[in-house]
Length: 205
Image (tube, rainbow, N blue to C red; front, side, top):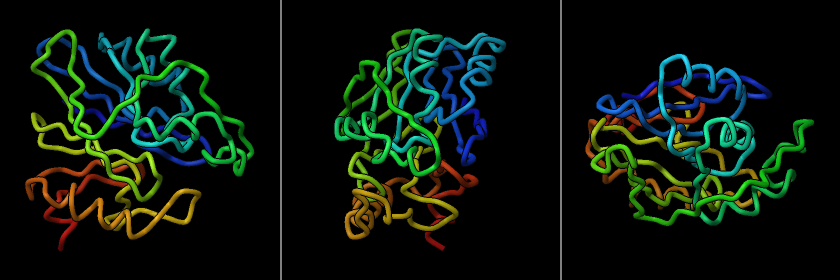
């Protein structure tokens, strides 16, 4: 099961719970704000969050990760090139928005092709697709069991993501789309960081 929760601070961001129905365990993707709300949802529904996954290091996707990591006893994972974004409020854009977001917690670094599996049910897994361009550390999390992919800001409002921020590169983003996302099944649901879901087929039309 996938549950989208819109969290609000400077921006509205989609956070996603991915829950294995058989065990009630799962992952939380991109908790960008409102840690108490997200914690309350997991507590009230009896979900056991084993890991927090970040699609990239911009603060509107990461700001609630550290407090939730402590509250849920769940490690944080992201692509290894995200390390500078976690340490630098200018790079992760929080300083531009009157915030100072950094993450000092230890992080489990991911690489392209990694499979993140639930301890409660190792058959339930999510695959890491390295899709740089919006940022150098951007990844897409592909969940074949739910026929969906969490694309972060690689796709937004049915278009390619922005590349105007530090580390952004449009040719790299286009290459990521062509070689990684467009190779997924056409009926894959693309779940973005800031816009409504759409299928890959809809994105292409």
